[in-house]
Image (cartoon, rainbow, N blue to C red; front, side, top):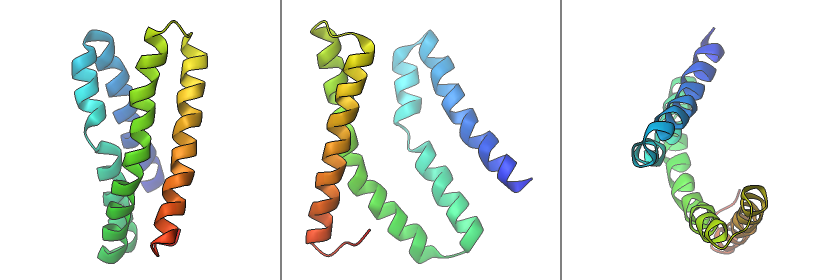
Length: 115
């Protein structure tokens, strides 16, 4: 039952963003930009483990992983505005983001952060 609650609340956030964005992209963007997924993950981790050190570590790791994820949000509209179709633009911006994740993980490993 608890797992079903976690799925339901998490899915509700995604549905709310997509429905709100149909009415107003700015309002959808505001809701999507809130760290709701992170907040839910932090809450679920704490409820499941009661381990504040793990919650803190997850929070810091999310902070570092936000940086490469911005590539998708920056590159996708540029590609779309230059006439690339949605799916190719999404694919290319996703590949660029994945590459930057690999780079970020390598940089963090270099500085002693182990994944």
